[in-house]
Image (cartoon, rainbow over all chains, first blue to last red):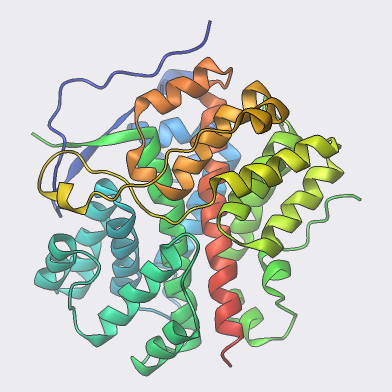
Length: 200
Length: 200
């Protein structure tokens, strides 16, 4: 007999992009904490993630989860030059806005607002979408992220040129590429293995 | 031919030691190493589990083909053949790419203010002849993969139940989802870095 998907408990589904804290409810059974082996626990990288049903679900393939998480952390947290943290988060939020991942957009819009102190611009991206006018440097980063997110990609030399005119060097452009590409990874897992819920 | 451990993103972009992109990737060494570790975990895992190498590389060729990333699709197609796949399976994957190719992202939001952004697009159902050649596990998997590639915001528990009913376990679905999501990253990094390299 095949397994069954989970039926999430009663909840309020968010119907707009928000910077508010959201919950995430799995559609497939995460590993039970008491059933996790040392390998499963190590694959979380951050021990506190054992509280997260999302990470306990992904821990079913621990090698893939651990490598995913270490890739993620270097793209977003490596402090060695390149794109400032705020703008790596902007690329993540723009990608999530374009793919339609309310949960990912909420987390990374919060980070983008925190690190840039440009709450109004970040909220405008969430409210108006990826064509919002955020000033040329941010517009160039959003446009490049969106072009790379389209399937097939529409990212071309014109996006590289626009990012350079906006003051980005090639390491920073590579950071935009990696941040947008990574959220094409993250959005697909978040969107397809469960759903967001408003916190009460 | 044995799977080598040469960095697949470097190979697909054409990054040579000492080049400017080699130096840029070296500034994010963990991301570079763990993108490769993810590839290994998902395509040549230490513990293969229930998903065969043929299934993994068939999905790889399909995802890259849907992205219009011909050189990358060819790479996965070569691995598919090396893994012992019959010619009929390779032909079925080629046929599925032709049947299923479209433009994304599209899809619907929960009813509310975002409904004005709903964008219609096809729901892929594998054609009868292709379905016979793919078999009862890969055919429903390809339908799910198409949704993940082009319209992930249409994800729903019913799609996961269809995979469970076709014999994919909960853990198998996590791995399948990681394969598609990771490739969505890998293909965009390759596309982005190739474009950057072409604009010295």
